[in-house]
Length: 219
Ligand code: SIN
Ligand code: MN
Image (cartoon, rainbow, N blue to C red):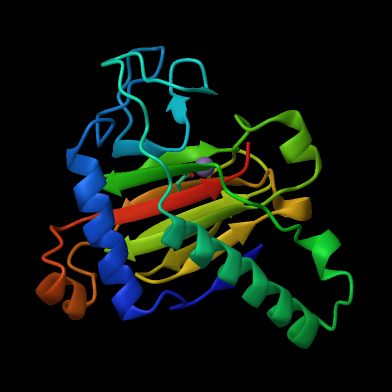
């Protein structure tokens, strides 16, 4: 796993929020997902590129609740993902003296982005990301995750045991990447830290309390 702290510039964080707000209010925008059990996820979701169906745990072209097609992933988001992988490669070469960085962390070209909005009571249980194609998972194509707004306690580990999970605080502008051998890491959001968003976001982007998370994947 690679964690790029404070990676997304202030300007880009504001641009992302504005774009997400615009898309989130339109067709295929934010909605409340519900599992097959009837339990609601403790977050609002918007899917870009393909729709992730929480009942089946699979992707499709429309969402059944309202027949909406997911908006496309903005090109400027895709560029940021490419840059984050490129910069991770440079870091792996420099800090860990790795030469086979393309194998350790394969490149990917996202065709899916799940956007989550967590209010201060939002959370997400420990899980693996397994809805992508078996080929994508076999190749270890990374999931690239952007955090914006309030900080989150992010848990990760080798199994679903919450007591053994490690914890890291994801703050606004952080990017975390799990690919290669870490592609199937268990992960989740234990809680959102109230009033922890940087003041520039609150002032300039008029962000309401909460956290936005974008996870980019290649099907
Ligand atoms: C996810 O696992 O889909 C989202 C993780 C996060 O919000 O950091
Ligand atoms: Mn996930």
